[in-house]
Image (cartoon, rainbow, N blue to C red; front, side, top):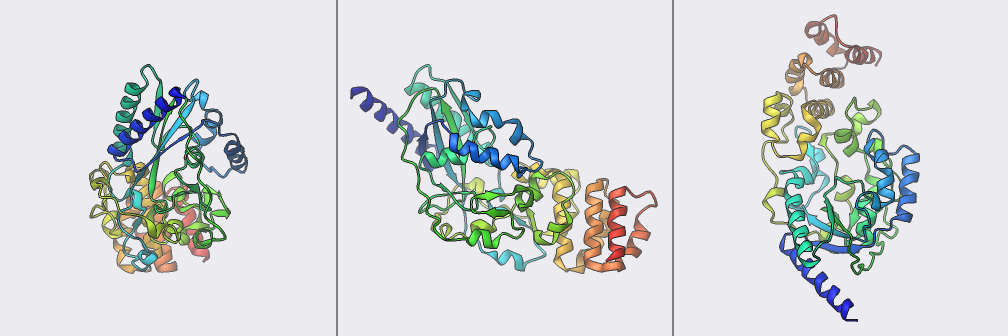
Amino acid sequence: MAESKDIQEKLVKIRRRALELGFEGFGVAPPDVAKAGERFQQWLAQNFDGEMHYMKRGEAKRLDLDGVLPDVKSVICLGTSYFTTPRTLEYLEAPETGDISNYAWNLDYHDLIQPRLRQLEACLAEVFPGCRTKSYVDTGPILEKPLAEKAGLGWIGKHTNLLTEGVGSYYFLSEILMDVALPPSEAAEDHCGTCTACIDICPTGAIVAPYVLDARKCISYLTIELKGAIPHEYRKALGNRIYGCDDCQIVCPWNPYAVATEEPAFQEREGVKGLIELMQLDDEGFRSRFRKSPVKRTKRRGLLRNIAVALGNSGQTESVPVLTQALSDPEPLIRSHVVWALGELLGQGALRLFEQHLSGEADAEVLAEIERIKTV
């Protein structure tokens, strides 16, 4: 009894410290992920991970957290809000601008949250001398959403994001694994009910069943994780989305309850949405414009690939000059998507531009795009 009271008091101290550091969500989960692990294995078996090969590489550790931290007994799950302003689907009515997922509007969240985790680990070492810990923020081989659900932070919605009553889903998850047994929190209950708003709105039909996402179809995957060409069948559906997609969260009836954070790191930065301007970025310009931003993950070639698709979908011929200039971009991936974009804007009228601005030794991807335009 005395030991139980002592551990509860220590847990209160840890929670208080977490809140002081800026974490809004806090809970403790046991390390067992058996049921979630079965669902994860089924997901992998259907190849829904696409080219995210790190998912399969880390499969064993995700299924058994002892492979991450030997003798792990508890997982402290934490939430950090990045919500800054209400969102609607009105961004689709501004085709001259590129839409960036809300979490990537400013600074890279890893750089903000990881130092906080280290400070919380220091608190744990003070409260439990000799304990071993390991922390992650969206980087480790762990099933973070099922663990957060068991820790009471929220439930996994039908769009596969974590949802919290009174909070919504605009928050980052992070974890600290430790070899000390802490009292587990009460697991969250599912409150999605019969709602299918997220499934109905998905532009590419990526939510193939409630709680099941085929990442290969997801715009977030296509614009961030996918390193090669965007499949043609999804290009029109991308619209003006150039980094991620928030549609399933925008329409979720739980997100109007979100309370805006005052964290400066997540406030929207200027100069990152004008498509024509962004299409002209060279390597130095890209690094400067997206310094310390999550968008740098795509590298210039990935972002300009996405921007070319968005310009092709814009219907605005004002972008033809800058796209024509990009036909000589050193990146084949960018060039091939620029050819597609010009074909969308000009139809077969783009063929004359290609004759004028492309050499006879154009790479195979570009030539294939030109042949496709000829047959439309």
